[in-house]
Amino acid sequence: NKKQIEKELSQKALIVGNSKENLPYAEKESKQIYELLETKYKDVKLIIGKEATKENIKNEMKDSNLVHFACHASEEGIE
Image (cartoon, rainbow, N blue to C red; front, side, top):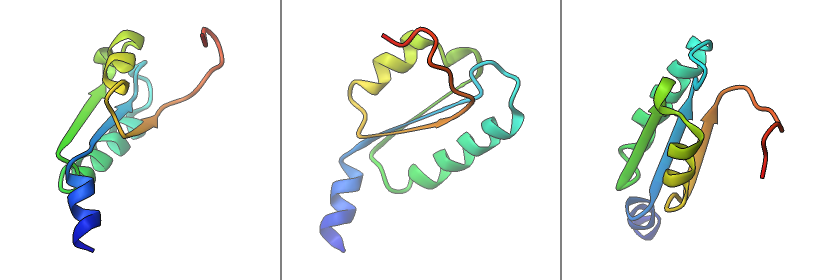
């Protein structure tokens, strides 16, 4: 559908993975998702490893229509 494609191309996606650098498959997953989405979204941002800080993620999430996390999760520090 042309309208759906145009809508996707105008949106921003954020991919976050392996923030603690101990999950190599999460990093691989993040890169694969990034490659899939960069053909569908106008703006796709990949944040992995040491760049995946709470501050960087929160800043990028503000304008993102889609966010994908490939990592372990914890409720610690949730505001």
